[in-house]
Length: 530
Image (cartoon, rainbow, N blue to C red; front, side, top):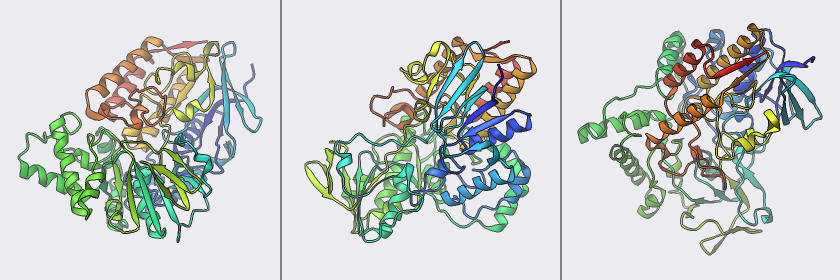
C-alpha cells in the first residue's frame, strides 16, 4: 500500500510544531493539520484579558535549539498571551514549519487499517490521507467546557468563553458584566475586565487558591545571566518534580518551628509564583502540613480584602494544591472596588440563564455581557472530539468509558502506531509543559525511527503494560492530597465524566527514568509487527 505520509500530526501548538521539526530531521514525510488559522495552540485560542503563563518565561520556552534560546528576548517575568504567540510564530518562521501545516482544518476521524498497518485520517475540509503513524498534539487544555446551564441560549447579550476569545478583543467600557467561574482564567481576567466595566458580578462555586505573580519587566542583566547559564538551569529543572528550576525545601512543615515556617512561607510569597508549593516537601503528603500553608494564604486574603465576610467567602476550604494553584495580579484587591460583586453559588447551582442575565439563589441578576470562565474538558476532551478507531473498529471513546487508559501517557493498547503528546497518564499539566512536550516529542520520534530501523511497520503497547501503568498512576495519585478534592484533574468539572486522576503525579525525573528504562529494555511493554 502506498501511503501519503509517514506521519500525520494533529495540532500545531508547541507539541505539534516541535514534532514536525523533529521528524523532518529524521527524514520522515509529515503532514500537520491545525484547526486554527495560525500556530500556537493554547496560546492561539486563549486571548482573554490578562492571559499570561504561570511559569516564568525564561523557562517556558523550547530548549532543543541553543541558538533559539539565545536569540529570543522575553520582555516580562511572566509572558503574556500575545508575547507567547509571537514566540510561537517566530519558531514557525525560523524552522520553516508552515509549509507542512494545513491550517483551518479540523481532523474529524482517524481509522486504523489492520491489514495495511496504517491510519486513514479525515478532515472537515474533505481530506482523506493515509499515514503509517498518527501523533496527536491536541493540548491538555484545548477543549472549552461550556456549562450545561438551562437557558444559556436565551441570553440576549454577547457571551464569551475564556478558552475561545474573539481575536479582535472585547471592549467592556461602560458595560455590566457577569462572570461565571473563579478558576485560573477568571482569576487572570477579572481584574482586567473590572478596569473597563461599569459593574462586574462574579459567580463563584468554589474559591481557589492563588499566589501573587509579582510580574515585572525582565532585567537585562538577569536575562544575560540566564542565557549564559541556560544548560545548568535546564539540568536543575529536569531534576525537580514539576520540571521547573526552583528550590524545593526538603523539610517538613510540621517539623519546622512556627516562626521559621512563617518566614519560609513569606519568602516564597514575596518571590511569587508556583514555587510557593515547594516551601516544604510534605505540603501535598501531610494534611496538617497542608493546613499551615492554607492558613497562611487565608491570612493574606484577610489582609487584602477589607470586608471580613467577603474575605471569608473568597477563602478556599479545600486542600491547597489539590486544585491547580493559580498565579494572579491583583485578584483579591479587585473585590475591594465598589463596582465588583461576588455571588456565592456553592450551595445551590445557578438556576438558569435568562434573557437579561441569570437567576441564582432565587434572585435575578442582570448584565450586558456574559463571560464563561468555566475551563476545559481537560486532557481527554480534545482527543474524544475526534472519532478515533483502532483495532476491530473500536473507538477511543469506548475504550475510555471508565476513564483514560494509556501506557506512559504516550500510547494505548489496541491503537497501534498512535501516539499522544502529553496524554493522560503523563506528568503534563503538573509540570512545566514545554520540557514535558520536548521529552515526549523526542521519545516518540526516536520510537518511530526505531520501528523503521528494524524494518517493522507497527508498534503497539501491550494490555498488561498499559494496565500496570494505569495502576501505578492511580497509586501515585492516591498517596498524595491532590486527589482529595473535586478538580479538573479528575474530570469533576464535566458532568458524566469518569472520576479518574488523569496526570501522573510521580514527578518529571521519575517519569523520564521510566521512559528511558522502557527504551533501554528494547521497548519493554511494546510489540513490533512486520
